[in-house]
Image 1 (cartoon, rainbow, N blue to C red):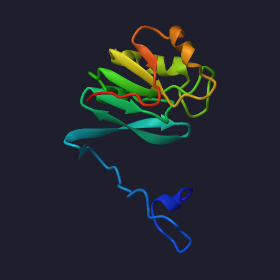
Image 2: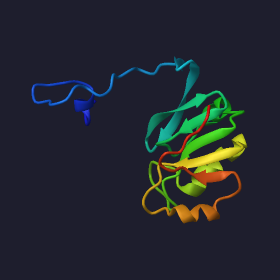
Image 3: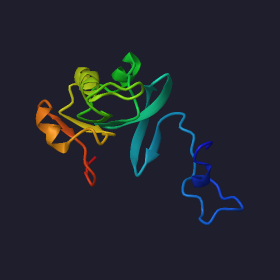
Image 4: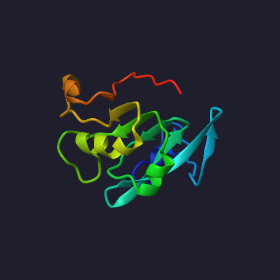
Length: 142
């Protein structure tokens, strides 16, 4: 709200209507007929929230997954996770860290997202079996 207030409300100088309605996330909720379970994640010195939808998990803007959150993610088949770049970063997983973080979950498919311009799509050949880079327009069936 502080940095991007213009997307939540209209003021006298606005030339467009608000773009988003803020909603507090304080537990599981339903979206499009599916139960969405928030999963707390580490993001640098703070926290952020990932989401589990059945056998799918979306974990971005993070650099740590607590044991309790790993427990909540057991049984997921597909994980989309922050894998910013090959080198380390203070508040995001690097590619190797993301792969290591989800290894205990043994997902069939791991998709690395939040990639920087430092990551070439051709680098996908360096990834282990079952791990791939996300790309614009990617569709994942739930």
